[in-house]
Image 1 (cartoon, rainbow, N blue to C red):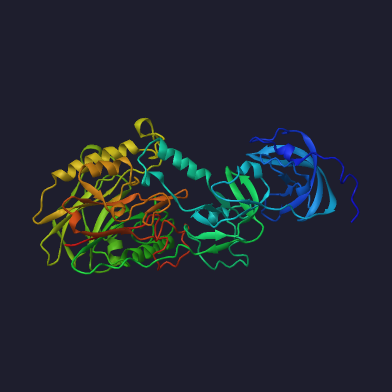
Image 2: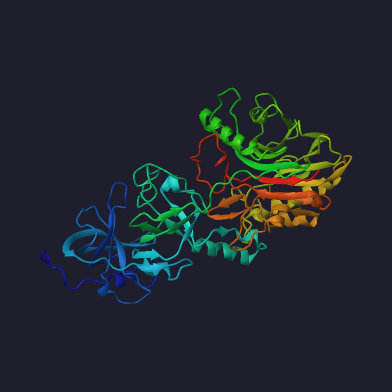
Amino acid sequence: MAHASGCGQPATPISRIQGSGHSSPLTGQTVTVEAILTLDARTEGGFGGFYLQQADHQTDDNPLTSEALFVYTRSHKGTRGDRLRVTGKVREHYGLTELTSVSGITLCGQEALPEAVTLSLPWSRPPESLENMRVRFRQQLTVIDTGNLDLFGELTLAASDQIIPTEYLAPGPEAEQQSQQNLRQRILLDDGLSRKNPRTQPWLDPDGQRKSVVRAGDTITGMAGILDFRFEHWRLQPESPPTIASSNPRLPAPKRPAGNHIRVLAMNLGNYFNGDGRGTGFPTPRGARTLSEYKRQQQHLISALQAPDPDILALTEVENDGYDDRSSVAMLARALGPQWRVVASPGDDGRDEIRTTLLYRKDRVLPSGAPRRLVTGMFRNSGRPPLAQSFHRKGGQQTLQLVSLHLKSKSCRRASGADSDRQDGQGCYASRRSKAARTIASWIATLPQVPGLAGTLITGDINSYSRETPLQIFADAGFTSLVPHFHPCRPGACRHYSYRYLGQKGSLDHALASDSLMPLVLNAQTWLINADEPQPSPSDAGEPWGSSDHNPVITDIRL
């Protein structure tokens, strides 16, 4: 086609608009650019504009300046591969350099797309220097977070699975620096839409039919498209669907070992509330919003708790609503089956909306002595009192003392003073968790000794990763953290973990054995059914996947 008036005349180079800093040196000025439309985001629900990149023969050859920008416009002129002459005002929009207030768009024919720049993570080039440009990743990337997949159509990717630094580093500046480095070395695979709750993800289910579940730990190749920056994150707006491989397949429950032993399963149930126990009382304060949601949650949990075939369950985030037939824990026990019984401690469960609780199979193990709750000191009026109960295997002579606990979370809500985030990798309320660990360790030492005591197992949600202070306090008191003992986490290698937070994985849930118990411990492991799953779970209600946000910790003890 013949060139329209003005095409080919001098124009402002995009690299000059972008500059070499974090913001444009021409912000607020009206400019005219002439470049190639590389990706159109003016579709329904899109970003309301398109990406424009300088032709390869017109770049400034400066690796510090980007050759592309975003044009925000309601005009529908131009398609991919068109050379456009655009006049508009330069603006920085939450870190994204763009043209807005567009006063003219002229079609100047077609031209070959600029060559995509090859990238890798960790960033082989500063991403700011490639903002809005065509790129491709030479390596396989790993999905590290699926939390926004259904909400915003995003997956978080990195070069490999990222591990919470305090899983393998002591709290301190090095751990905090490594955590910040992890956050910088990642990219989001985006869906090119600005709306919430997209019906489909075009790179995952282009025909609108979801055929597979993407789990954290899966891998992606063929990442190519526009390097975009929105909402404080670097993103790839793909030009074509990448290839997603199921590299982290769902595995069956761990088999029980041979011989006489007790299997203990500890799990955070993710706020298990049952309304009023009569089918009404929804939404609940912290759990299900509807009766059908509660029933689905219960079915998921029953599958998760039954499949490993445990003898004892140490559960956290169970509604603190007593022990009558309509209580959450009583209804859970009935759903598990006629052999299951609840360790009841009425009046000593604390004032929190949730509590720790113990259940056991009466055909396999029996309680020895009465249950005990720690209801003095810092647990007198606040917190979730730990629960201790001894058990022996039917026909066995040795006794296991089991302590179930759930310490304060890392959430910074109302945190102040010593409970504030000290920037050492432990988050908020580290001081309170450390005090609780000392208090519990001292309390355990005062518990009555039952006949044939083989040792003590502390298990539950400690809300602390393996190298954080509460675990060190328990270690100093003679307790070994079992999952890292059998399956230690190191940088780049961590197969057993219980939780993912913002794309970093580690273990908040633990099993700790006393020195006398250690020779009897056969194994301790996590079962990866929850932390890697998208939330809410797309799985059938009768399956364990996505039954909570914490993986269970399973401990086998020879007794």
